[in-house]
Length: 112
Length: 111
Image (cartoon, helix red, strand yellow):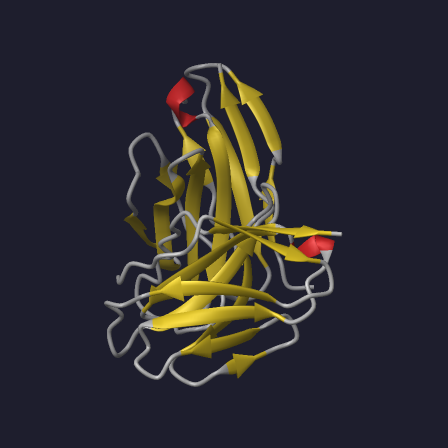
């Protein structure tokens, strides 16, 4: 089954404790991206990657890092999480040219 | 990317057709119209997309006006499981591929 898998689905952490949210897709997609969703602000892109070792900032990249060492994986790293990063996070993937984007089920992160 | 305008909410009786409108008056010639939906806080789900011809798949139909300034997503027989926020997005389907989600239309299907 074609899918994008995020882990964990839920996470509560403390300020400053580094964490990684994993994202994996099994569709051989070149393009992957991370979004965060906040009430009243909708979905905003954090980072994206057009292929292995190619990443770039989206609209709200501050406080986040990503890596793309393999085509299937695109982890989101919060080196020093802060409460304003409490949000619902989605990973997405698609072929570069046209077609649909597949989204993961989301990771609800709470930073206290 | 061109902006879209959608009504904030709509109701539909179960079994009836749900017609969700979208205005995209500044759409450019190479931009496609995409529809996604988000059920509760799940990941957005692709529904359909098109350039200028009407499109139909197993989920829905997309009607794009001849001048391409507006479109309508049609769910032919809405069910309770179709209750969701529906997003109309216009974009060029290559390069950065960023999806710009507006506020969407919250469709409530009632029994």
